Length: 211
Image 1 (cartoon, rainbow, N blue to C red):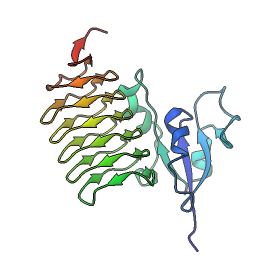
Image 2 (tube, one colour):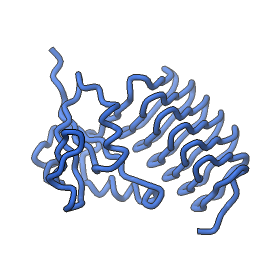
Image 3 (cartoon, one colour):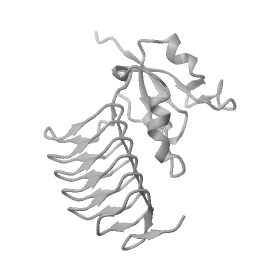
C-alpha cells in the first residue's frame, strides 16, 4: 500500500486552484492552501481550507507546490517563493497525467505542468516554472527559473526564455530566439526575434510597448 504524501499549495490563487485538477491523489493528500490574505484564511476552495503560514511549520514533512505570480507580480516570484524560507527538498513537481514529458527532457523543482502540456526531446525547464494547459516546448528549448507560461503557447526549437518571464496565453515564439529576463509577452503575440530584458512586448509581430 502506497503511503500518501501531504501536500500544501501556496498561495490560494488561480494557478493553485487549477493545480487541484493536476494532482495524483493516489500519491498526495492536499491538506490545505496557505495564503497571506486575511480575507481568505479560514475559507474553502473546492473543499480545501485556506490557512496562514503556520501550516508549514505545523506539518514539517508536508511537501509544497508554490505557484505565485500574475502579469502584475511575475517579476517578484523569486522573492515570494524564497521568502517562504522552506527547505528546497520540500518543493514538489505537479504534472497533469495528460502532459507528455519526453524521456530526454529535464525539469527542476516546484514546477506545475497542467493538462496537455508537452515537453519535447532536449527541452528543459528550471525551478518554479508554471505552464498552463496545452502549451508546447519544442526540442532543445529552455525555460529558466520562475517563469510563467500561459495556455496554448507554442515555443519552437532552440528558444531560450530567461528567468522570471511571463508569456501570455496563445503566444507563439519563433525558433532560435531569446526572451530576455523579466519580459512580459502579451496574449496572442507572435515573437519573431529576440527580445530585450525587462520590457513589455505584444502584437503580431510582437513589438516593445511602453508601460
